[in-house]
Length: 384
Image 1: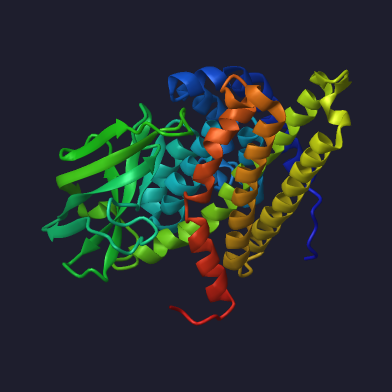
Image 2: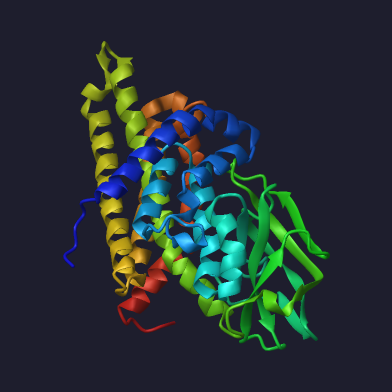
């Protein structure tokens, strides 16, 4: 199959549908959601009704039977007006539902996936711990077998979608059999005795996205809540992160394109010295650079998604897409605020909110430093 950057009719229709939803339903509420830090459950349900949470899953599990690029297109369009809503979809599908689809038993898929694919419930992805961020292998959470149950103790932090009023469960990594090299995945339902969801963080950005600490104190779950093979948990979760980097790249592209949209509009409306500011090269060149960033970053994640869908090696390209798009996003948000001047330093305008939201893109699902490390390894460079 030859590579093409032309979307299919179905993909273009989806992109247009999500764009209309983002403009008409999400954008008018973005400032208020940001100010109040309220999780938009009603918007999530609408997105579920549109089939967005089920895009990459087969219809037999409540999905839409689409492809991974279609999911990324939806994330980009949502992120173009509000990053919190965009990350809610990205995490809901990529981190919440994908582990069940990729590593669950057929019974787990049939029981757990439909409610996630239909947007009726959300799930979290518990990997990061207080002592293990980029060092994701430094896990301290343990799971001990006790008859036909597992007993879990430990904690997780910076977990998305685990504390909403529609959060159904969290999948976690835990060290099993007292062997730090043996890591296994488990499904822990919300409300299980001993499982506590902490208060939300006071974050710089993503104010309408749910982010929490999780605590496990002698949490007993049935043996059938194990997800995947014993000892494969760390490798399984890294596999999820490999794919998720493409989706985060799409979210970053949405932010960059949102900056372009706002700056083009403002450059026509705002006048200085008797002329629209867009007529001055100092402004026009900045906006041209932003558009170039959006185009380059978009092509990068399109290519990575194509490789993934074709079953070709994609990890290096996913890291490149994630690295470049997120660093471009931080630059784009900064330059957009500069174009808006004083107004750019307020959250009344989207560019101010984009500035708040941009930095986390360089951190979540693998920092920029981690991406450079992975790219270097792919090139065969010696490890330190």
